Image 1 (cartoon, rainbow, N blue to C red):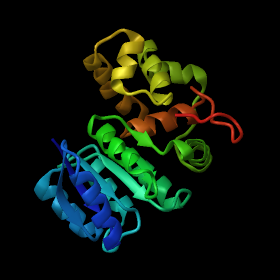
Image 2 (cartoon, one colour):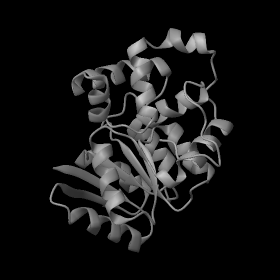
Image 3 (spheres, rainbow, N blue to C red):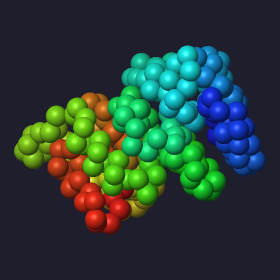
Image 4 (tube, rainbow, N blue to C red):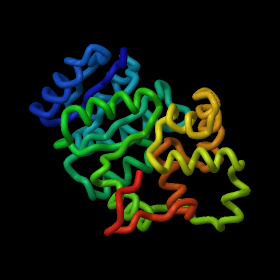
Length: 228
């Protein structure tokens, strides 16, 4: 059972997302919060598997809550899925920097939101595919990870970690990466666990941003096909 916390200051959105998720047989909504302060308190008392957070909330905004739940020493450490209406707002980029596992627009199809919760609970980051090119391009152009040379990038990662990162940047899940590399899923998880600290990032999604920013893969072209 996937235990989920939902936090949004809009009653209709809060009730709608909660009802949508609670209707799934493998998902239990263990907390519903109207502001960031309440969300943090509920996260600490219920210890959910995923926190679905709005960015703009009173008391504590979604970035602050994400940072509290996703920093390396967080207790509890809770993966965050950001649901927002602000697809290119600075707060979205701030949430990614704070360690969010992904984000979707609130008008995403119900099955997309449900699938995203399952993906995040399984340790797989997610991002709205319609926004991927824009988000990565804009995030890389604005934000603070320093690009390193190709040689330096090779020094940071082993050859197999680089393989994992390339497949991660294609949007593959742990299971898909394992199948592509003909290894066990546990091996992929081990590579990821070693890779994230090396890159100085806190989530799979941030690792993908690192890959684009350091030219391990190319930043998606505005007119090209969707990235991952």
